[in-house]
Length: 166
Image 1: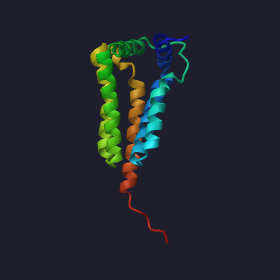
Image 2: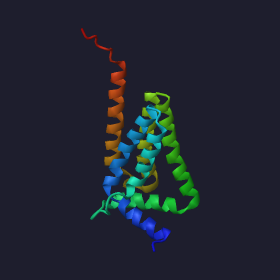
Image 3: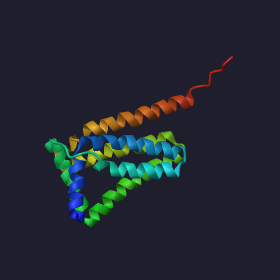
Image 4: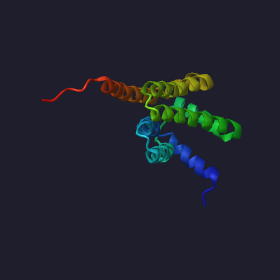
């Protein structure tokens, strides 16, 4: 029978797969869309999918040693009860603030919060893991492109005057 330690090792091995890093910004946008539509069911379902997505993919055959160092630091943070609580709290607060902004239909504030969240993760990595903190820049840029691209499109659509059809 698998104990908690074995389960966490199993989950962490799958979290090392880059696909699990690239899928989360997509879920982040989906949860914000559900917040904008004021759908609690959509938000809760997407939050569950977003948090569970780190174990959907098989362990990678190889991994960038810099990314391994960043993820090992995250693992170390989650092993200490105080730092784990603080880390999870900060992550949840950012998601709640983003959802709140979109719930109130504040696209600009939501965009500021999402950008701060994505950039903050890299800054945090650089502060605590040195040069290794640059390792997740690819998925961060992917997230920034998705977040800002969709937001710019929505802002453009919101400001675009209706065309009159004859």
